[in-house]
Image (tube, rainbow, N blue to C red; front, top):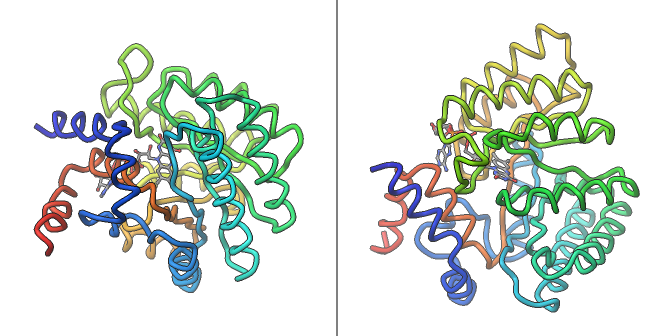
Length: 305
Ligand code: FAD
């Protein structure tokens, strides 16, 4: 049953019609539990509160599936506005974005133009930018663009997904760029031709790439809510005398909040991924797919409770 629900929500997450409808009608169905709000002031307020609790943030100006150059440029403008707000309010926050929102499905030229505009402002404001990883079909293009931008900018990183069979090769291939990488299990519906279908295999591969990337001497963001992986990372860094400055834990806004606070108390760097904006639909559906128990929130939202 859980697998059916998971597939159902992942299927819904790709629906362009609902994506557009959701933009029009605003945050609904309990999505506010996972999304900080629709505006920059909402996001600034949330970041400030998290910073006050000792947590760093990466802010995500939500956006995916855009159809025109105009929409892509507007999404880039939104990111620039967010970066300027981070600078203006002296917040401890990075920025995350998706290349599809920058026009990846339209042209590489458009993506590069948008990314350079964002990275130039981010450099001035000293804000690090992470390119989220999307579905497997876009993985090669995303990594190519990351490599080109990394040649010109220091304050850029990307994400690798442990569920992909190819991921260990990507860790090795990217090593020459001394990359700051976020490592995750992976959130999209992928074919068994490209990704491990079984959770236990994903978890083993995840541990393998965390170890590889850390032992390569690179900065590593371990982005998970999974206690077994968190404990594994703690043991690994201790056994290998890796300093707390070389890694951080990351979790999503609204998920396992107490665990986030505990990790801060234990002295670890904890970064919370805070999405905001009106394009909340796809993000929200993927969170429901990860944990169908969250559907209870949706039902409460629908029933107005
Ligand atoms: P799981 O094995 O899925 O979960 C472990 C435990 O965590 C569960 O038992 C449950 O207690 C809790 N949990 C997990 N998810 C939820 C939830 N939605 N609601 C409530 N509890 C939950 N994926 C990408 O493909 N590309 C990205 O760029 C990307 N960026 C990310 C950035 C951050 C900061 C984080 C934390 C995740 C990101 N992800 C990304 C998502 C990631 O790939 C996983 O889908 C997600 O983190 C769930 O996997 P998990 O590691 O938490 O482990």
